[in-house]
Length: 145
DNA sequence: GCCAACGTTGGC
DNA sequence: GCCAACGTTGGC
Image 1 (tube, rainbow, N blue to C red):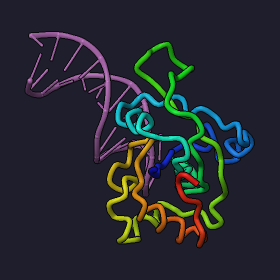
Image 2 (cartoon, chains in turn cyan, brown, green; image 1 turned 45 degrees about the vertical axis):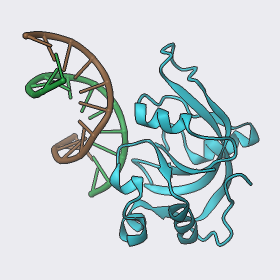
Image 3 (cartoon, helix red, strand yellow; image 1 turned 90 degrees about the vertical axis):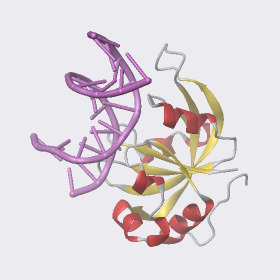
Image 4 (spheres, protein in one colour; image 1 turned 90 degrees about the horizontal axis):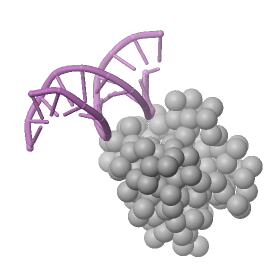
C-alpha cells in the first residue's frame, strides 16, 4: 500500500468537482508524462493520495482513494497513456499550502518540493502522516483501509 | 503575464 | 545518441 499526490488546476478540475462525483470517482485523465503515468501504473486499489490545487490555491485540499487500476486513457487514442480512477475520501480540515510544506524541514524531500512539475507523485508514509497532521487530521485514513 | 525548469522531439 | 529547439507546467 502506498500514498500519492495528484495535482489539478482547480479551474480545470477542482476538489469540489471531484467530491461531486462521489463514490463512483473519476478517471484521472490527461496525463501525458511518462513518470506520472508510471506512478499511476504502480498504484493499487485502496492506495490513498492527496488532492492538490496547483496554479490557484497551491494547497492540499483533500484525500482521495484509488478506485480503479490503471487503464487506457479514454481522452486519447494513443495507447501509451493510461490513468487510474480516484474518488474523494475526505476534506483536509485545514488545507496545507505549498508554503507550509516548503517551510517544514520534515518535508524537504517531498516530491512536491523536489519535483515541482511532476503532476502525479509518490508520497512517503511519513510525509503523508506529517501533511495530515498539519492539515488538522489527527486520525488520518490509512491506505488499504 | 513572465520565465525557469524540465520533458519531448527531431535533425544530424 | 547527442543536443538544440520547442512546448508545457506551475510558482511567482
